[in-house]
Length: 99
Image (cartoon, rainbow, N blue to C red; front, top):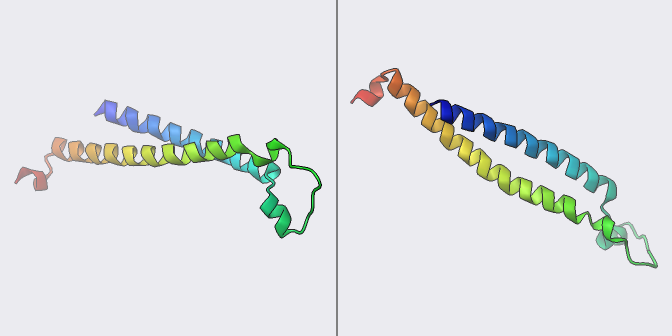
């Protein structure tokens, strides 16, 4: 049971890290992202091509990876918590499990 608790705590720490990473990435996207579509919507014409850093590719990749990792970690944590509940009920001699 201790291993399950440690695994759940480790997953929670990773989820906090993903949340912090998302905040930093989205903050950077908000500050730097510029697209032709956004400029066109605002009726802004630029004679030159936009510099590559305005696409914020690394930040978008970070958000995408974080989303996928967060989904897997949340599902893993849910399974671990269900296993812990099951083991606690068995350890306490839960009447529903005695039948």
